[in-house]
Amino acid sequence: MDVNIEKYIVIILGLFHFTDGQFVDKPRGPWELVFKVVSGQWDSGSTGYASFWELFTSSDSYNTGIPVPDKRDFSLSSDHYKSDLIEDWEGGLVSVQAIKVSLYKNNEEKMYIVFDGSGKTKTTWFKCNNILYSSYTDLPDNTLPADCPGRTTSGLPLTIMKLSHFQAPCPQTTGWLIVADTSHTFSICPSFMPADIAKPYFKYSTLSNVGNLETDLESADSLAIFFQVWDLVFKGIEGIKPSAAGLSNLTGLFTGELVENDNSDWTVQNLQHSQSSQTFKSGVINLWDTFFIDTVKYSMYKSATEKAYVVFDGINTNKDSWFHEDNILYSSYGTALTEASLATCSIEG
Image (cartoon, rainbow, N blue to C red; front, side, top):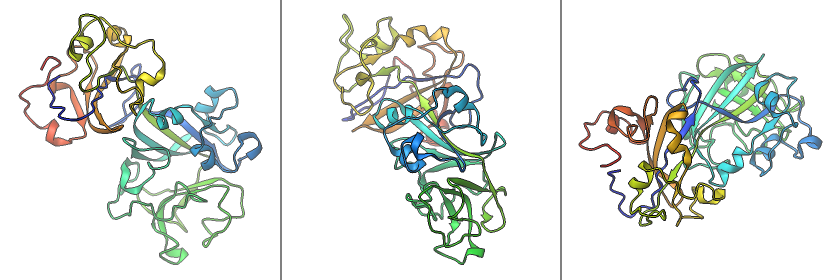
């Protein structure tokens, strides 16, 4: 892999997503549900937390013991859900490329906003300067500050306003999303953001863009958070040779039949480098032809932070042919890479 790594600590990630033919939500996806909360039905006794945001930011997971229905039903009669994947992400065991917040009514997705997950944590991803795209035509909005207007982690943790109640009289306020947690106990604008009704509750603009918070909001049944998660299959560290007998470089390990640390515990795959001296290759690479591999991500990390990535089309490829300029879908370099004429782009270099 012909790349100038300079002084970087490098992780080479052949990150596959097995979609079984699912639609790939451009530019990232498909999505896996990691969190769901139902409107008006919070029970601190069963969930163990006073608010849904406390559960989300905690280290615990939550389900009723029948997680498959919990993950598929977004109606008012369903239950809350939190996946272990959130803590795997926080602990550096999985790579989350994007995060989607959706509101559902009658089991239909009514709106969504997608955030960049690269290099983020469970408490830093929800920023208005971190929005990638959404169902609203005017989001992202480069005029919004990083801390989304109207948002407070104590009572309105996932709220996005354009002109908030701190900036204008209530009838003049505008926005896209109001998410009121159980800790929302006082409201300046009770007409659209009451504090004395069952919580949590979720409201969204019914327009294709920002709406008037007095007249253009609709209530949702549930809020859902999805991750676009990559599966780690290969990791290499600058200056560390494979330990497999007869191999002196990472290219030989990747293209060959040997695996490395495939049966080790999860710490070897940690993206935060707690096991930075150990190379990793999954046996999945050698079974490439038996899986439906729709995308492959090749990333470089430094100090536990992803610094660059390139995503390749994996359909109808093998473990040697995917790394080709004709297969590049998108990258952290934008059009500078996708529109470039490359002198070299191959596994062998």
